[in-house]
Image (cartoon, rainbow, N blue to C red; front, top):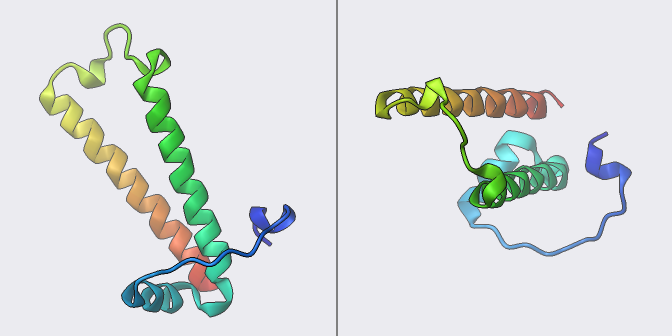
Length: 99
């Protein structure tokens, strides 16, 4: 049981491109569409909230951060962050295909 199944839910109609729906069904199956979409939307909302928070004063970088001392360091940090995201996505997809 996923986190969203413990809360009140409302049925909504969404439109997806045919290719997207076919890939979704291939990866998670028709019976797990809603859970997958709900989780994906929650993840996107978290990222948007983080992005908006970083635009304000709370997100300003204060002080000297060694990992951001130059363009090469920022690039290395960004690559590592993206690799982490890819690994988390692969873990999430693996758990969906095992269900």
